[in-house]
Length: 226
Image (cartoon, rainbow, N blue to C red; front, side, top):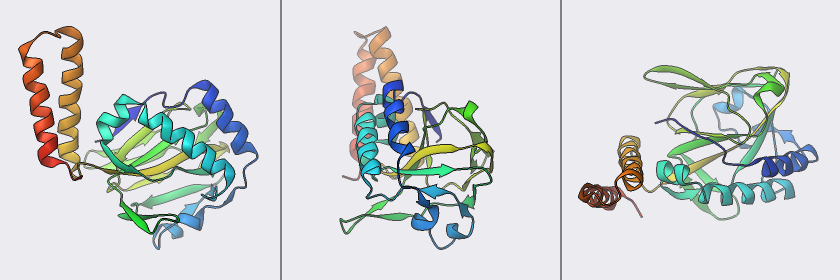
């Protein structure tokens, strides 16, 4: 399931992020590339331990925790500390799949990548190209969202970033280990949760709401991996 999560960051948060990113120590993006992706990766990235990356990562983590749509869709058990990349003119990232496991820096702990996320930090009008293209059984899906919006998709998907031909594209990217490993089961729970929210607004006294809420939690109890 691919999901567009709008307005994860507001305008004030975006302005602060851009100020920090403008003075940040960008480095070669190969620092987080795997054995295969290093061959097709041409971008810049912030070192995860720099002050700007840490501050912005904490800001994004707080925003995600307060976003009901993200929480419902991802059912996060753990979120990898957000990273940041920049694609200038001529930069791109060829087709690749994300590593199944990612080590959390400084912890000795590894996270299973069930979901991948890209949070756009540059307005689409400020650059040409740079679309995130996610491949699935229905074909290729090109994504270029407003600044502050996020795209969530299965980490098992092949994906790429098309060449930037004008300006620069800056974004945050990270991975999520979900409480529910299976994408199809997560999608069912997401739809059921959305139906519950709608019923709670339209017919809050309906006995069906209690029944559907019970079904949701019993399925989550059955499928979750704590």
